[in-house]
Length: 213
Image (tube, rainbow, N blue to C red; front, side):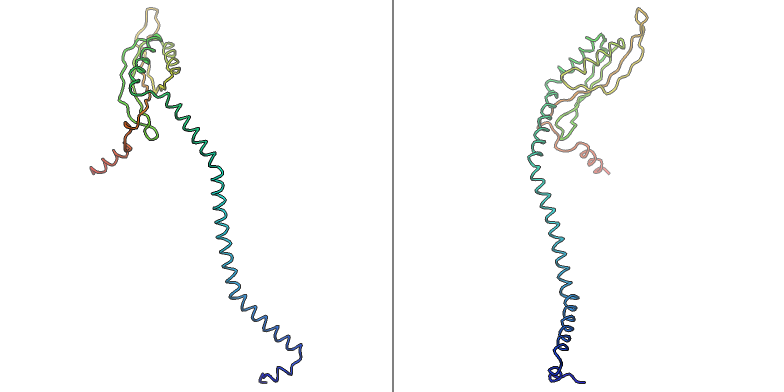
């Protein structure tokens, strides 16, 4: 049967309502399958982007809140560095420091055989200090060596004992063994900016080797 306006007008109100309800369901279904689902997808993307921005903002706020704490920590590190630098002699103090170390050996009862300073080389972060190695040779009793090491440990400047070797040299008048001792040690000196190398010596050396190949 063909559907006409007259046919529609003859339908009961209930039938008309059912027809319009069915049409509404179809329209809603189509909307859900296309526009609404697309809108929900866009909304999800927006919510995800918002969550990321919110997390980023909170992180930045946390950093900003901790900035005074970080600045204070850096300030304290600078103070510690200044105190550490106070224990690093300048180049003009190295000869007197080495003489002091040598004299301490004699004062401890040891006989000085050799005291040989080595050349200094930049080390440490940003090369703000250089190490100065030196070799010492003494003869004497073992307990005198202990006294010597104790005196070195109590110096106001940093002196590190890297290694030492001992062997019996001869025997004294009372039959006591007299030891021959060789000590490798080093101290450190502060490097002013004008003495610091511009480039990392290791990198420079590696680059030079690479250039020769």
